[in-house]
Amino acid sequence: MKKLLLSLTLVLVAAGSFAAKKADQGYKLNQIRDLALIYNGASYRPAWTVDQIEPYVVHTFADGSRDWLYDGFLFLEFDKGNGTEYQVPVKGRKPSARADWEDYLNKLFAAGKQLDALEECIERNKKTLGDPGFVHKVVLMMPTPCNPDWGKINNRKIDGTKLSGQQKACQWYLDEVTRRFREKGYKNLQLTGIYWVTESMQATGKLTSKIGPKVRKKGLQFVWIPWFKADGFDRWKKYGFDIAYLQPNYFFHPGKVAKSRLPEAAAMARENGMAVEFEADERLLGDDSISFRPRMTDYINAFTEAGVWDSSAIAHYTGGKLILEASKSASADVHRLMDTYARHIIARRKKPALLPSGLR
Image (cartoon, rainbow, N blue to C red):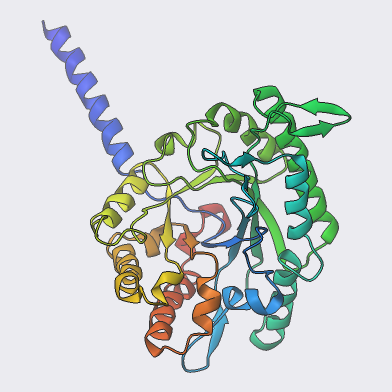
């Protein structure tokens, strides 16, 4: 009987220790403190010239002072704007093929735009602001293969619905995107990661666990940003990722999603060793500002209360062009809000604890 009680005690202690360990796991840190999401490639997106991307590189305050803003940039796209999707397509839309992936890459590496524009913008601003003290990091998306007629590699047809074909398509893309980036020879940009564009593991879990090692073999991180409680969000390591940012999905639903979602998402991210996403979009600038502007403030305040600003890597979803449009706004209220937001990001660069211990 004593042995049985001792065994039960040990089991309970072990279970308690595991629960405590999980609860205390903490937010995920990364070599990028603040990762800006730049949607690019679809027909309805900005071309991302130097002038268009500059507000994401340098923030201009209401008093005219300027400072570097985000230290990382994720270039990604969901669809082409013609019904063809780079992620697992929703019903009625088409899966992308090799030709679509090549079209995306051609736009991403177009002369004078997107990555080229980011490189030039940083170089220009170094002349007035001085060296930022860090190298701007870049994460580039990987589309999800799910087209049975994806295309050919070495004159062999690839079936994007089969795991073997999917792996070949992803390896082709990984080789191509890293080759093109390397050949550009950017001085101010460092490629550090590959982003998996489909936000749930419902259909891609078997594939991503195979792709993660291929990404790491290139010396890169495999990055994921699942929606709130998306399938597999709490098993992100199992599915091959090096870092995952949890979406709270609060900003978008006034009257439907309560403010309590923000501390709930922060707690879920912390318990699962994840980072967190900040969310806002252009609706806070227009007729809907009365509904959406306070919701951005809710993120700022909730991130303060939950310690996100102080202890987590953050991905920043700002719609298709919020930062660009806000920089041109005539509203003093908009500039005050964006200044408050920018101050949090800029202050984070002065906190060595926001980098993994090996990078401090």
